[in-house]
Length: 184
Image (cartoon, rainbow, N blue to C red; front, side, top):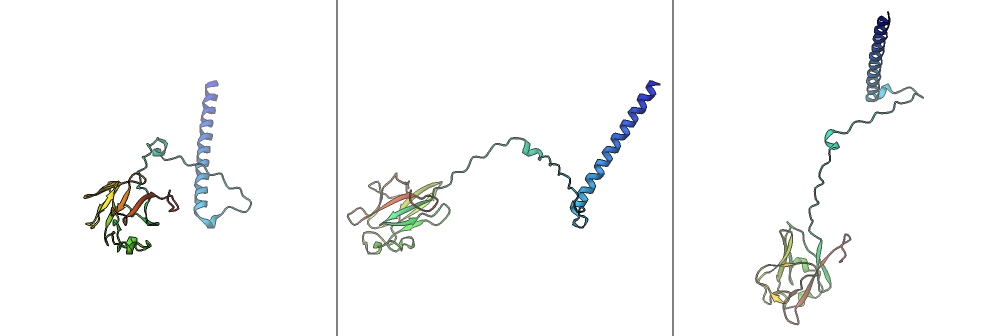
């Protein structure tokens, strides 16, 4: 008799568990349907069931290596006769220097300097580095006191750039800009 009672108790427990699971599924389904249909809102004063947190996707649970940030080209400018000339970024047209260069149109007194050619030099980016090239100027472009015949690499504070090497020549300083566009 004891065995029969144990079997009956076990069956009753199994039925109660199955009923509880069905009731839980029905409740979950009715809550979802109610949320999806605004016209079937919960009656006033009824408590909304607490949402169950969704499990994170499987790929978020595994650690991923963080990619290293790609080094961006710094924001540079030239100081020429007291005026600031922005250096264009990689993939853009070169920054042109000279008496008639559009990039230098706002430089005071540059148009009157005969030692600087109309199209004197240009600065451009190649492989993440800034270069200056003389554009067949009469009086030459100088980096660190040496006249260049082919492109030379420049860096802020590391090189001295000069347009024409005589007393009438113009010193050009390469500066790095902060996030507000002011020289560092």
